[in-house]
Image (cartoon, rainbow, N blue to C red; front, side):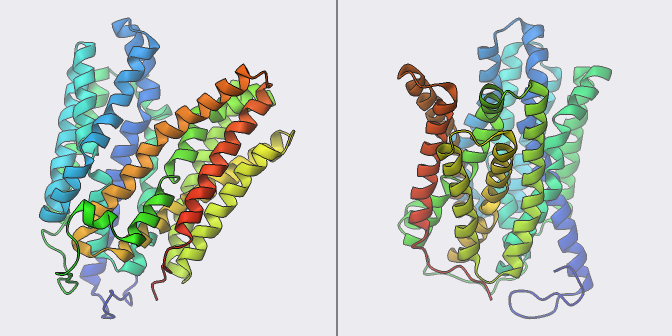
Length: 417
């Protein structure tokens, strides 16, 4: 893709200058993704520190951590429309600036209320960051390259999630709180400068015109293809987040007797597998013409593995770990699914479409996490053992996946020759 013989969506060979610009855009998008991942992951590190500093409960501090996500979800829809109207340079600059300002407040805040407000501000800045990256990639690369480049961005930017874990804990152990988060804010302000230096103000290629296409969220939802993609979007992030972010640890410890350290190692392996999968799915999206078949295959394998966790009475720790690894790996089908959405909407609506796909995926996370726990409670109340409780919950997750996959199966082919 990034060789001197690369071609754009109209078949013309691109110049070396264009190739350099594209490489800078990939690096910039990866840096912005890393910034978002850092703030998503940092909560598990700073939460114990703030509990001690402000003498608050775990429930109260969990509200501070989660308010960032709620703020991001509640502000996404209007920002998607603004993104399509004003373009990624302005929206990225505003988003990262807001994140930087929120981080400054987080660095110098002296009370719980200051920290709570800071997380809200950071959430506002996070709201359109992912969709802005998608629009910039759509502007700069052909439809065929869209999934591949997004896979590269996620793979490279996932380092941000790692920086928000052990490296952040190490930094806070050796430096002042204000110093660590002030440095994070400075890095964000530097990103704003890079955005204005690298990102074009208008699409490089103005030939893709869709004057007769719909222009609102409602019009997009009325398109059958968009609805079917959104149906599968409901089960993109929720299963992997439910497993890696909440119930995977208790499952491994309570059912299979793993220690906290051993279950943590498995969860780390799951995260590493998702990073590798992001690159592989991006590469496959560019290399394989049958995108729909690839998405259905990956989603189907993930559904089957979830069903096996529900149906097998005692699979053992090795088989269980292998099934979880396959599930998390295959869930990265969200990368070619995003490329499919890019294919069915015009370029001037990519912002709204990306926001919709992200919104349904993120909104499904608390629903699946809560539903998983509710089934555990119902099964326990009914007198079932802990292993059967988790089997019922995995079965419900498999059913949700199967329903979404069935809806998507009726979508039109997603090839990009």
